[in-house]
Every structure is written in structure tokens, then in C-alpha cells.
Length: 143
Image (cartoon, rainbow, N blue to C red; front, top):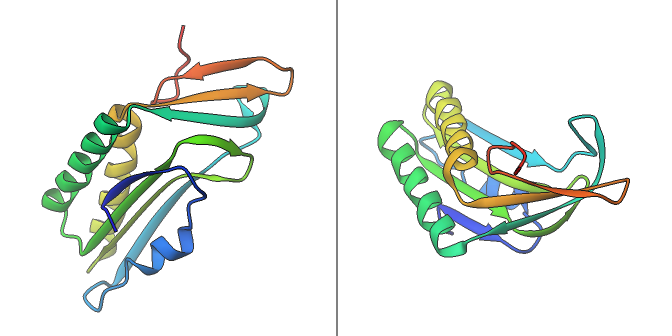
């Protein structure tokens, strides 16, 4: 399993979570970003994610490697979907195991924040009224 990956198929959060197990880990922290039915007061029907895969994978791998050196963790994984997603689908999964909860929480938060900030993945929101809009990786609208 790669530390960072883009996925075109459904993310199996349970399988990813089970791969984090370690006899040295006293904490496992997982974050699942799930497609919700609204954004900034508008009803959302679905999302579409696009990425420049070579750069996204390189940047995601760099972020995870940085977390490995910055935090005392055992295992770590981040998977981000691309393609069409429905309400309730997992769009991104970050999981970290560590000896202690502080490191696991801090590393998990660091990875998701950095992925949203700097990995070239773009989201298109499709609204109930038939309109759609592109969003930057950090969630701000593309104008």
C-alpha cells in the first residue's frame, strides 16, 4: 500500500484503517472527508474531483513523508478520490497510528490540512438547481 494515492474507485475506509494496526501503536486516528449535500447555502447533488496525477501523487507523497519525520508515528496513509462522487461517498481518507494519541491526532490534522492546501486536486460542485462551480483545493470558489 502506498502512503499516498489517488483512487478512482470507492475508498474502503475499513480496509485502510485495519492496515494501520501495529503492536507499537496505542492510538489510531482516522479522518474521512465525506461528500455532503450542501455548500455555502446551496443544495449539492454530487461532486467531481480532478487532479494532475503526477504532481498530486508527488506532492501527497511529500506531505506524508514530512509527517513521518515531524511526528512520532508508526503508520500513515492518505487516499483521495478522483472522478464522480455521490452524497455520502468518502472523498478523502487519512489514517495514522502512533504510540500516543497526541502524535496521531497532530499528524492526521497536518496531512489533511496540507493536502487541501497544496495538492493539485480540484472539486466541481454540482448543485440541485442544475448549476455547477469549480472549487480550489482549499475550498474557495474559482472566480
